[in-house]
Amino acid sequence: MGATADAAAEPGLANRLGFQPGQVVQEFGYDDDVDNGLRESVEDLVGGELVDEDSDEVVDAVLLWWRDEDGDLVDALVDVLGALAEGGAIWLLSPKAGRPGHIEPSDIEEAAPTAGLHATKTVSVGREWSGTRLVTPRGRRA
Image (tube, rainbow, N blue to C red):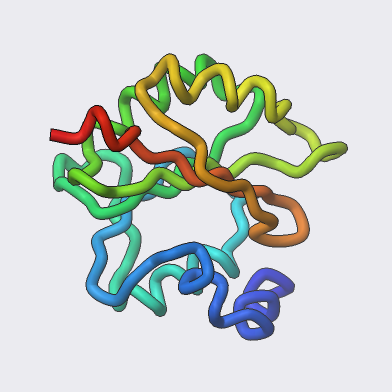
């Protein structure tokens, strides 16, 4: 219930993260520890449910919930990049410092360019999670 209350307390979170009505957003790495308030905020703003990670649909944005024990971050970023439309963004969501599964910022900074991405900003997206916005560099866009 706390996550739902968080969403009600900050209905503009998805808007602050740059999501727009009508966008298609795909989610990867869902587990029982995700911030449901953030998920609901995104769904409310875009006007639909998040697309499952098994979908082959081209999407406008990706939510990637990632924990230190989830494997190779570069491989995961390359995989989700394949679903992303030109000009789209990946929000890499990771546990905040001091929480189980935390990823060091230096690991993200190292993985992003290896996957062909550039980190544009990092923000708090709830009590437990931080989000890093990743995009393809302008020079690489077709």
